[in-house]
Length: 93
Image 1: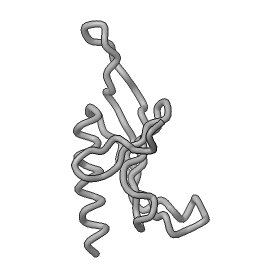
Image 2 (image 1 turned 180 degrees about the vertical axis):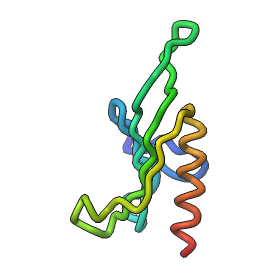
Image 3 (image 1 turned 45 degrees about the vertical axis):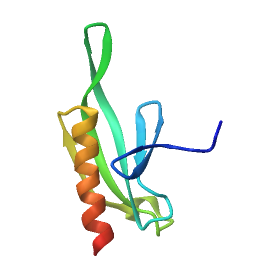
Image 4 (image 1 turned 180 degrees about the horizontal axis):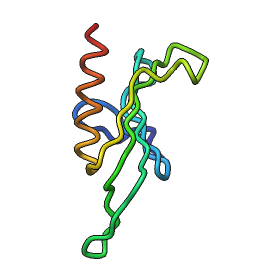
């Protein structure tokens, strides 16, 4: 393993099963995307429903780490675009 992460629009993206983490863990906020549903299309398994969660990385209490969330019927790219907007706004503040 080279130690490099995949990235999307300037932020690192790490996937483990149905969980994706988007953003730098050293930043105050990251996005956690949970895959809730998939669908089969042309022999491919595609994401169709997600839970997008903005998390505060500065707190040790997982219940206080959740800043906002949204369940959406969308594909992975739409979910990542929502996450990017949330990260950009949160990191500018």
